[in-house]
Image 1: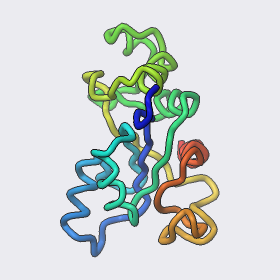
Image 2 (image 1 turned 120 degrees about the vertical axis):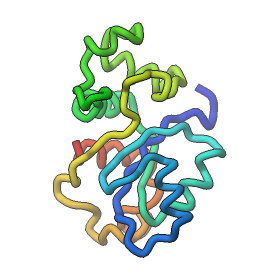
Image 3 (image 1 turned 180 degrees about the vertical axis):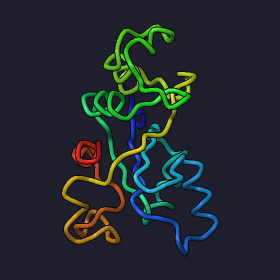
Length: 160
């Protein structure tokens, strides 16, 4: 896979009290309408500015195939709030949730290509809470906000 094609998981960790309309719009475009919602985007220049803008309200990083497959199984939903199953993927020419995770991570396919599959994952608060130094600080300072790289997989596991 080429540079800039990695799949990012973005998780909203803070609410929108006292947030400017500009940032609220950006969160909406990222499909992060509520706290503990997660969406998937490609790592590219189009999203870089958006991520910088929501840096104080969300965290993100590169999701791996194993974690994505688990996320799709546990939190993936079809329209009508039906759980995502291997049977529901047969209409897309896929045999399993793992195959869908591979198509998204390695194949460069977008979640929007799979009509009927909801692009947002509703997560629980993380088991054990957020970072020791609190939600309102950046990951670099021991908090929960901003870019966390591959460590996003640990957070996703704790929130499923």
